[in-house]
Image (cartoon, rainbow, N blue to C red; front, side, top):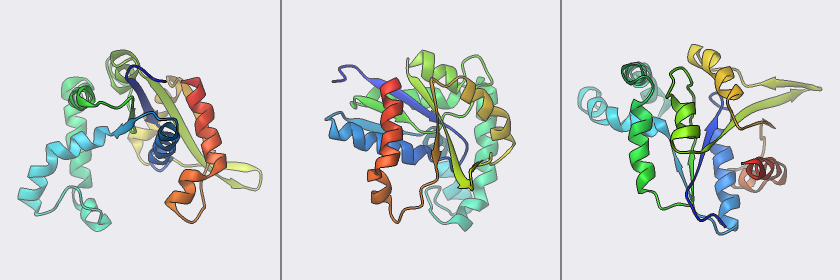
Length: 202
């Protein structure tokens, strides 16, 4: 039984299954009677930009419509990067820490650890500031006997993902899920086995 707060960061390129991995992990912890909560640094970015996007673009930053997201996507990337540079990587993690301090969950999972450029960047923060563990995920599809891994989405990921992976406490590869539904994925025994193996190493 977990008696103190536990922090777990998940890293990997876009579309590698970080949220899915976290959801399966939360489901397993729930079965064990352990409370969990998920967080994302990107949520802090959206909160910062919510009023500006609504007032100046007439759009909700929480929209699920791809065509609307595309209108302000580059703005979010630009603003997020500027605040990272101004604070040497500490702006978004410091804002997230405020939410983590309010959490009463046993296990707190941050699903988007992506940077290790500055001395106190996201990787250092999860491992040394909140004394957590870092998982790196790589997703692939099989073509014959060859694993074709999900490629980095942009130059930021091309540069940062290998560095983050080298600093991870656990690295895992998993095959792209082709099942019919979210619930089926959540209960898939192969995926759950992979997640359980990682959890045992944390």
